[in-house]
Image (cartoon, rainbow, N blue to C red; front, side, top):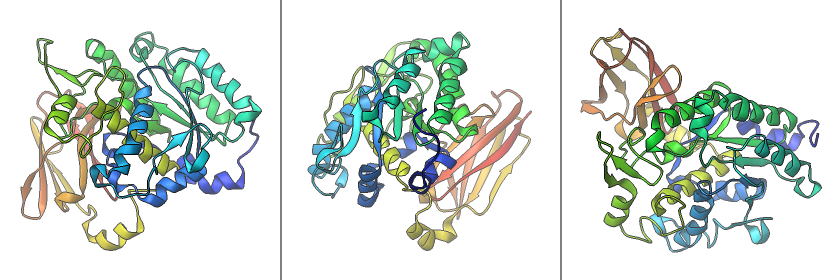
Length: 382
């Protein structure tokens, strides 16, 4: 094998990504919070190979458009010119990202697995330390056929063991309304596996499951950002609605976005840079300056009652509203049942009222994410 051990350099640089899980989802799409130093560290440390077909290109075409968008001050960015530049080889200070490095996509097993080994065994790729594979389709059929583990999760795990100096990025598949039950189940299985096994996950589906206002479209939208009514009729497109109501070049940018809309690829690009910065050591959830300034605003108490719940429960948090990134109701398998719950503010508390009468009896978790930490509350429904 190419790597027989972990060098001291990688133990230092990649200690966060190897020993802690990294979940990149819709909450990781605020490009303006990534500091210049984190972007520069990513460009200095990462050498990325990305294998994908059409859907996966949304990430890199979004990254292409981001360069000029940032140069012109979009989203209020004020960074050095061409800071988001990337190319194969990392020339002229760009991020080293080899696009279409390996042919095909992760839906074709064992091709993607063999192509990964062939790529990493080539001497010219000896500096590669991040491997990314995306889905195009097939995530639903892998799940339905019962081979998602054997043809994706297990091979990824084998590659991680064989090449310990390389970070392997797991991905979920894109939304597909006509096969939403199987797609969502497959993606939830991937999320659960990554959460339980401390993996790096680029949650492709989660990023396109939310509109800019936080509305969750996981169960009624497709990869083009169309959303549907109960009769299966298209009643809107959250990306187009945002683009039509916001200023191009200021709030969003035009770019190629296979099968979808530009704003979807915008979000994928923002999340990709969040991931790269995190892999290079940036930790948005625990920066020193925030710890010093806002220690008193970390969640210190949460009261969930009634618990067990029959028809409804309430979660009260002693915190400040602007500290909360998301509150989600999650099954024991990692499936998001209710996304981005909205609070009723009462005095210095945030109160979340959660309807449980349609839930099956069992254990659930309410996951609260802040910009400092995350905390889960166990809920019994009877």
